[in-house]
Image 1: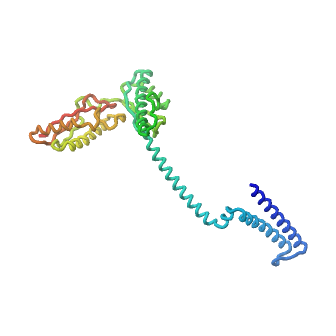
Image 2: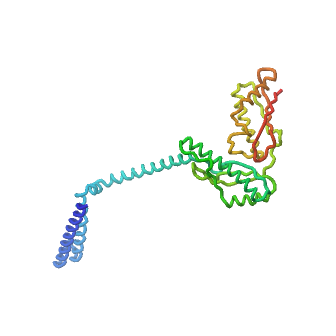
Length: 326
């Protein structure tokens, strides 16, 4: 610090001396009416004054370059420094882009519910008044809260982090929409299917804002009604029969959705109360029916029937009627 102050004093003193000498020289030239490069004496005096100022500036830079290595490098290697700076800026931009990409991947990996993803569905009986309607809607919200906690804890367990207590409230709603829905349903006749969904991405350990859709809870399939039917080769190995049955049950699910049965997001890839992966009994029944034809195996017709009355709110409970194809 003291060295810097000393350098400033030296530069100031030398600059002052040069300025003084330049001024004296200018005045002397003016008095003697001397000419430089055929200029008028007055203009010659101005030239020498400007020259003096330039000399002061050059001297300042030279002195700083002599006593400060950084200034010397800047003056002698400016082009190289500029090129290096541009390369560093480019690398920095690439690193920032990569960091943003990785952050986005991490963030997406912690999504609990995606935009407009369903959380659960439930039923509300209409025309029961404000208080009873509110109680029914709150039960559905409590169910959505349980699902949201479970979704969080499934990821937290994998990450070896503290789990969210089951008594916590992580699901929130928009009060105006909540009150409006209660007001409408409390005075409407009939039963209604309520869908609870996440309007935006909901992230790990964050609050989960939810919104509602509703529609009349109508009868879609009567008990015993044929939903669809398909043929399966019962003579094939069990693995192939199971694969054919899996594909066919997906068609059952699509048919149910097409007719108006809402998919229950809380049950995942299920038709009714039976997971699609638990098909051993169905496979065995299909193969048994195939053997009834009188030889090792053969094609059978699988009829998918409604196990009971199925409404909009679901579930899509089904049963099978397996018949040999003669």
